[in-house]
Every structure is written in structure tokens, then in C-alpha cells.
Length: 442
Image (tube, rainbow, N blue to C red):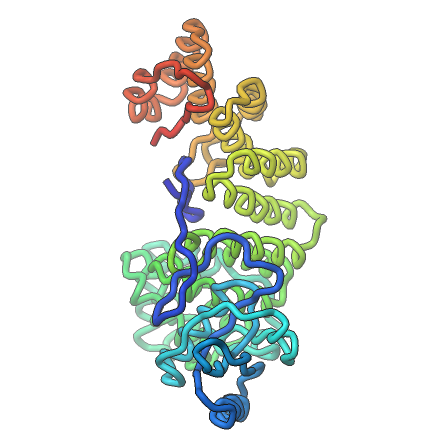
């Protein structure tokens, strides 16, 4: 079962990813891209050099850089390619741009030799979701957050609805602010699509707004893209904001969300777990390694990077990476959620590979943390999972006393978890080898 990073859940599933192939809609490649290969977007293929050069020149004249021609292959075609991207997703975003804008309906992502790409001017820039540039957000402060979300009182919503109907009726309040308030009202009515339309009008500058208001609109729109399952666009939106948000902490938060979107897309036609690791490393390089708030965001990114190994079925490496997360952030109060999750996942992995004593120690350290319900990722109870793991260890070791102890612990402290999972737990039997065990409970 894949772990969703906007609603984290327990899972130990292995993901099989299809290899890359040429075609109209090729799946993302599996595994790590070799060091001598990057990704580009093929926009044409020609039997003659003159035609290929003319195509390349046409794209360059329209502002697309870098565009280059790959050497002739066995089919005697010269291929014109845009960009040299380190991850499939970045190239995919431009493929979508070329198709949706009518530039080239047949554009598709392909792997290209890094040596060919190295002769180009740059790596290519991601398409803009909001049409921002370095001047768009000058003077904007932190994202408001509470000011917009805090409007959600009956009286406040009523006043803002009336003001929205007559923008001149709210002295000193811009139409852009009122539009965002109306969007927030639609969110409360579960109309995310309607909210997104309103937010994007402000975010793209279609309605005049101050830099702070436009920044808030971009932030709200990115969140709506995520919640309407438009994760490819959400990824691009968070990447854009990560480059242009004036405040470092907001930029760090956008890096976290961009990696999260890639994680959720990994294993589909739009990405791979190696892409997530590359993006995580890039994000970590951009976030300061001091200050509790920054460290908490780094912890989230490292946790996602570590979990990619679990999703690929490499539990030994996953356990080692989770141990690093615990070691790096165990003394950071704001990262208790990430440390607790790392210990929980590490214990599951260690049980699966038969390292029982280490798994027991990880569970005991987790229980000693006394993680509060609000410190869990949504849908993931690490305290209950630690007790379930200790129950599993007791079953594997045929220790009926410990088994009953942890069953009682779950009944008393996590009754909902016990009710949901007791049938699976009680049905557990010792295996011939502990490496055959798994704690895959829902």
C-alpha cells in the first residue's frame, strides 16, 4: 500500500515501475538514471540535417533554449530535443506545455545522452503556472495563512460575501482580497474547483493585487491544485513558488510540498522514486541547516527520501535511512512527528528482514517519545503501530506473555486501532523464518 504524503497511512507494499519506452505517452523510467543520461522533450525527427536544423532554429527563435539535434541513429533520423532535465517530471511538464499550447502535439519525453545535452546553454526552465517573475512578489511578506483561513466564521463569511457582491462596499479592501475570501468560502462548501478558478485569476495577475495578496493567491491555488488531484500542476506551482517566495521559511515549505507531490506521483506514468530522491537532495541543498523551523522541514524531506527505498522494496536501505532521520532530528522538538514516523517505519522494515532485536529497540524508543495524536501524520498512529510491531515480535518469538501484554495495551490505549486490526493481529502465527513476517495491517 503506497504511503500518501498528504494523508500518510501504514503500508509495506512493493511498487513495480515500468521501464521507459518511446511513444506517445511513455511511462517514467525505472530506477536511477545513469550519470551519462538526462531527459529531454523530443519535438521533431527528420531524415535530413537541413530540416532538423530548421526545426531547431524555429524553436530557438521563439525563445526555447536549449534546443539541440541528437546524432543520427539506426533509423537514420535526426531528432530535435528541448531541455536537459535531471528528472523525468521536469521534462514531462514541458511535454504538457508543448501539447496544451499547441506548439507540438506529438512532443514526448525521452532519455538523451548527457554529452549531447552538455553542449547546450542551460538545463531549461520549468513552465510557469502563475506567470510570476522576480518582480511580481517584491515587497511581499510571509504567506498570510490565518488572515484568509481565519475568515471562516459565520459572521465574517456573511460580511465578505456581501462585500464581494459589491466590491466598493468594503472600504480599503481590494477586489482581489474579496475574491480570495469568496474562494475560501467555496472551499468550506467543498467546491475546490470553483475556489481554484477564483484563486487563479488573482494568482495570474488577471485581477490587480498587491504582491502580498498575489502571493497568497498563488499559495491557495497550489493547495487547491493538490486537493483536486492535479498533482503535476501542483508540483510545478510549488517549484515556482520555491524559487520566488520572498521569505525563506515559505520557500522551504514549498520545497517540502514539491517533493511530496513527486512522491505521490512516483510509480505512475509521471515519475519514479529516483526522481523523488533527486528532488529531495535538491530541496535539502536549498534549505538552511539551522533553526528549528527549517530543521523540521528538512526532516520531512529526508523522511520522504528514505521511504522511497521502502516503496522500491529495499527494506534494508530504508531501515538505514530511517535510522539517519532519527539520529539527525531526535533533539529537534518540531520534528517529533518525523522522528516518530521514521522509528515506526524502521521497526516494520527490521521485522521484515529478521533483525528482531533492533526492531524491538526502535519500538521501545518510539513508545518512550509518547507521541501525541496531533503529532502524527494524518491517518498514521505511530504509537499504536509500535505496539502492534511489538505484538508481532512476541508472536514470532512465541512469547504469549508479551503478546497478551501488547494486545491489552492496544485495547486500552488505542481501542479504534484494535477494533480495526484485531482480526489480523489475532490471526498471526509464527513463521518458519522471521524474515517472512510482515506487519502489513491497515
